[in-house]
Length: 504
Ligand code: NFE
Ligand code: MG
Image 1 (cartoon, rainbow, N blue to C red):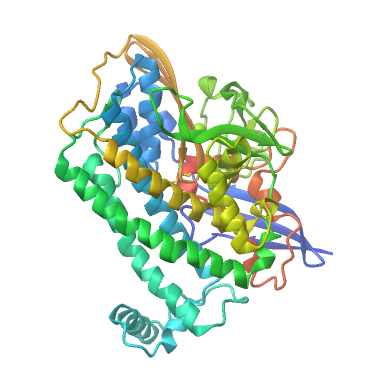
Image 2 (image 1 turned 180 degrees about the vertical axis):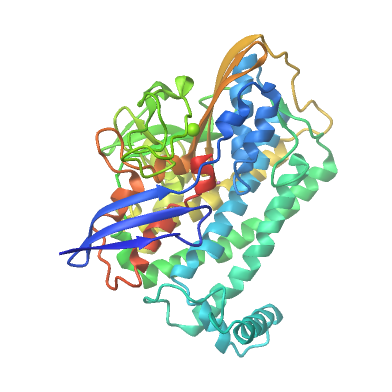
């Protein structure tokens, strides 16, 4: 007999995601992931001045605004026929790199690590670290004032096996607290050339409006050093520690096994020259990205109109009562294939392309620590490992971009908005491949479509009934206790879903 397990909402992710599991003899035989709200940014943009786009689309999300701003200005660069000067390209990379670092840190420490680390261990802390003691005091005060959920917000949680070693838990909790400070520092770093974060005001078609000065370079350099040290000494080490306690998670949550990356962090004015390369890895074979292969199905999505449209022709007609539909996410597909996007996709595409020897060396070095081959990366733990590794690689590369900036040289190029035009902005957000498609008519936005990382990963079934990547990753999972389906939430969180983005 099959049972149903509904996890609604999935906590410690961004936004409103519900997961419904059909379980037989403890094994998930069917999974559905549903985005439970609608936002309508693509509709808001219609008829507006194109220059509103990079500001409005950044409001899709407070976690990855820089990526939406970047996709938008890349689409406009193409529509206006402009390429930023070197300083503009570098400043864009630096703002985005800072945003990646804050996003990856909050995902691991504040959202995901608590699936493995026993944060409740703080209540028995007996050392004299002031930060840990103030957390302990605060948790105790919560327990006194909240009789329903003593130790809220950390409890209740799904019970399962957590790391048992008290010292390791306490160290991870210390890093949990430090990560909050590191995240603030990363935002500060992004704000040096982004003016403010979240939602930078300096990202414009043609470059970045903030001037480059020696002082700003020094501030960035100084912050990045601290972030790099934390990534190396805490983040990477904690992922390795979690992996040593939960090796079975190298076997779980494998998913669709196909990976898509658009490429990100421009290394020159050429669109294909990116630090993380673009590509599609399908059934283990790597091929060049063909953006013409991207389309969105809507049979099971709460939208009316034609299904299978390419984004440049895409439409957004909300239809909340549509029969059979179970999600506000569309179902993006690539030439008929279900594709996973994100840090794991970026790392695997780069690894298979062998385009960056130091990346391949770093991946092999990490795999040595796991005593395993690259095949283990396609898993729940593999996603965490890839995310941590790319945080380190981006931080290291960013140090060089900072040194390449030239004070007092131009940071943007002027442009004219044409009466008619089109552009595609393909980039990578922390959670994966992100594209914005703009169509301009009468100097205004005629159509604007975003195809977003979590829309790929958490998509519902497509028109042919093929489940999305998270749905596939959940299928086959063994759930020990139906009241505590922690195995499922660990898998979902490894994708770092952001539903605000996904339903945009
Ligand atoms: Ni709201 Fe986002 C990222 C984008 S996810 S976090 O990263 O684009 O779909
Ligand atoms: Mg869209």
